[in-house]
Image (cartoon, rainbow, N blue to C red; front, top):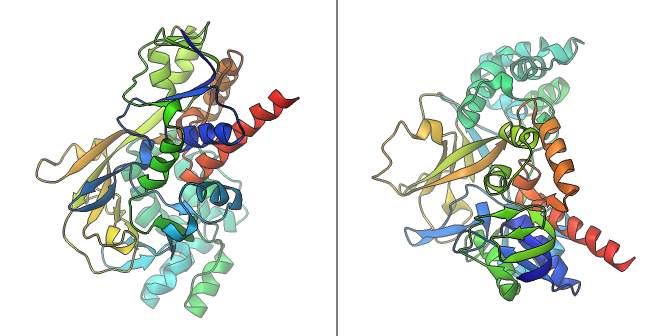
Length: 405
């Protein structure tokens, strides 16, 4: 029996950051188990058509968190990254405008601008109406009927492929916050206004795919990482994995459904885990080069299967073509054998109405067993990679500080 203070399930950004933080602070009693042949999780890349393609979809390093950047630059120096001012667009049926929608209505013809402005002015949030609890009602309340029907409702139908009123509204703070005043100002001045989205500036490797930094993190903990190691059994009572690895603490970054399938759990906890919903996304490569300055485009048109297209030649040097992201429930309608594609079963945690309560009960139960949820799947939160790194560092620091007391 191999014994460790920490066993980390999953070598994605959060698990790798947690492990490397331990090592950085002198803690060597840990082991990372990864079922794939390489580390990186959703941030892995493959060489497709002679250039890297990020098989987990569009992932970029935000520049806002200095602690995260300082940590990441230890493995991949700043000089190895290119910095970009984000250019993302929304492709409507008759026009392509910059994102976010509300800030760029001025790019429509004036008659269309007027229709959107009247609609926004009549939105519930601008008429003093109480914020609704259902997702679709919230979209109408916040953005008005026209943006809801032309963009937000069809786009969200495509990306989530579930009844939208099963979604909660607690996560919508992530959307760009653009007021009616901001929209009017933007139309008058013909330039965007209001709170801009995440990744306003972002970093991407100059010579590699996004996997490179996670590959280097994995190399740093080489003796503490086992790849091609599927979790077949979890003895929760004794914290033993696969009858071979024993831990004082288990750090779980894999989906709770996978954890649940390998361990004996109370019926109530299994039921809570079953309430956690996720989206499966297919990444498909298209070799055709498109003339655009955009890094990626959102596509609400429901007659088109994919919801987003990323133009890799605009951020990945020396590459060509693009890739699309499509919810697998929609992608299944199309024969993808003629093009390169990759299916991520676990791509997006879905923010359903009951998720906050379910994940709180799940994490509370497991923490009493010295099992800690971390990252996108452990915390069941649609977090960007920089947030996952930050959470990994924070959890490691929390445990290390208790050890030193």
